[in-house]
Image (cartoon, rainbow, N blue to C red; front, side, top):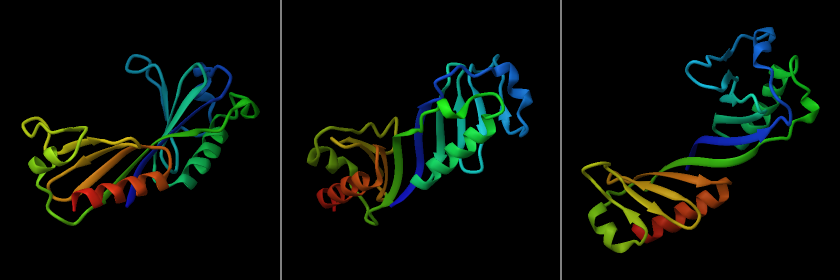
Length: 167
């Protein structure tokens, strides 16, 4: 199982003065209000999107350790224009993982065997399985993308149970 993306979000509990973004010492940010109302900050691990309201999203992370490290780096970047003491740490909102069951999967048969599935091969080559804990995109090659999880353990358990039902 490989984690390919973690999304976390939080609140700085203060408005962000976008007009002061050019004062930041590091130029790894983009803000173009004609394209999008949020600003993007490139971090050493992942990226952040920040809004004037103070809400922020960290994404593109591949481990839970990256979340806290990216958050600290994010606060350091913004500290010249905000008060970091007011900020609340991010909460993990979504973990996306990828695994390979290493068997060919007959998707048309799986439609009958599983409940809560969508399979429209003319529109998308994979089968979408919506379980209680998360969602799986299952491909005939045996590769599976897992999404909608808050922690890696529940994702592993979900994948393991799914594999037992399929293989």
